[in-house]
Amino acid sequence: MSTAMRGDGGDVTAREPKRLYLKTWGCQMNVYDSARMADVLAPLGYAPTDRPDDADLMILNTCHIREKATEKVFSELGRLRAARARPGRPDAMIAVAGCVAQAEGEEILARAPYVDLVFGPQTYHELPEMVARAERARGTPVLNTEFPAISKFDHLPGEHAATGPTAFLSVQEGCDKFCTFCVVPYTRGAEFSRPVADIVDEARRLAAAGALEITLLGQNVNAYHGAAPDGGTWGLGRLLAALADALPELPRLRYTTSHPRDVDGELIAAHRDLPQLMPFLHLPVQSGSDRILKAMNRRHTADDFRRTVDALRTARPDLALSSDFIVGFPGETDGDFAATLRLVTETGFAQAYSFAYSARPGTPAATLPGQVDAAVSSARLTALQQLLAAQQTAFNHATVGTVQPVLLEKPGRHPGQAAGRTPYLQAVTLEASDRLIGRVVDVRITEARANSLAGEAVTVDGVVAIARPPDRPAAGEAA
Ligand code: SAH
Ligand code: SF4
Ligand code: F3S
Image 1 (cartoon, rainbow, N blue to C red):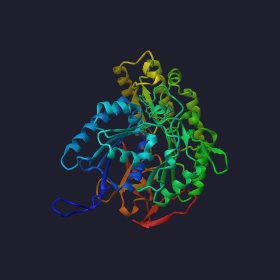
Image 2: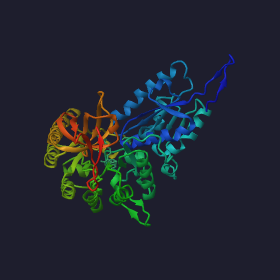
Image 3: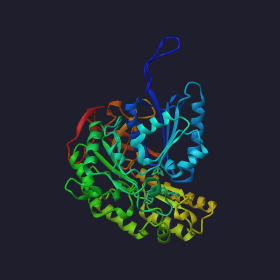
Image 4: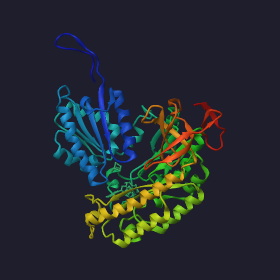
């Protein structure tokens, strides 16, 4: 740690804080983990910077899910090395964290021997010790890809440095499903659920720090089965109900990412009973072909998915859906792909992500026969994305003219504007005073663009209407 020093000329150099540059790829769990890494390093004097040039420690929090994601790490490492070579920061350290570190730790050190630290997602609570070790032994990189017996969640600071109007909260990590295309069970390890009480505590702290929307995170968030205060084990539905109960003033709860197999009766009931639980659900289905779903080891059929969606929509008629799709999985025929298009057409998605299959080393699908030609995958991806984009546009247009509660999260791009999200996670911009940021405001949607909406705040007697959960009276605030 730097202290005031006497330089050669005898003048006193001011104490300089250390700077931390953190770049994050991948899913929301990586976003959450990056914030926890910053929390754990803060007591060591590290303050965040968004410029690698003046950082003392640069961490890349990486994603291994597709080949492209992995390759980005190596090009970014070259950039960091160049940043370190500039005058003045010879002692800056370069670290690789996240899922590429876990899966390819040795390879990173072989390809980029100038890296000082490589550590996997389950080791972040050991970060201060790892940094100290790397500082002591410059030139001898630290590699830590253990799955420690002690949970990182018990050893990371519960106090979070920064919370805006929206916050993530990891409740579950890891995956035991072993879909044949996926690296996550290998990079994140076995399923682990945090105890209910710990989650409620963390949610209370987030709400006290200003969070109005909390998104529960897990690689398989609805496989959640945490130790409960009553001595039993609760699923996600009961956890959501407990959070709604403990935080009656919190206007918004969400969760992601869920698996169709783990949508149970209690979770469906939560969508029916909890007004705080937003009517928008990301439920990846990957394919509409039973043959492909089986080869993917998804362990449900297309009709199982249809029935689950029907049950959710019966419970919460205004529920909008998002999903993930993979095209070009080994063995996928034109007929299989047509079944995916059919499922999309029948279900109707407000939004979705779709990917061309990427063979991942070490996963069972990588060695399956019938790998699909890149040109075929690419044509299927284009067709699927056109259909999904048309559905998204139709969904966005359908909200024009309606009034939506919008959580204002930040200033808009132009002065006098604010940006926020509807219950369906649609981005909205409107004219609004900065004082309204961090409030849920009723907004009349006036225009739908490709990826966002425009609107105007609803006023009652010249006062902006602050939206409230249905059972609470509305309060007003001057515009
Ligand atoms: N746990 C989530 C998925 C996490 S990965 C679930 O079970 O649905 C996010 C998405 O990346 C997946 O839903 C899938 O659509 C995509 N994906 C994962 N592995 C992939 C691969 N090898 N090639 C292409 N897309 C992949
Ligand atoms: Fe990957 Fe399947 Fe687990 Fe999702 S459920 S993280 S796709 S193995
Ligand atoms: Fe990527 Fe790891 Fe998340 S592989 S999607 S960062 S769990």
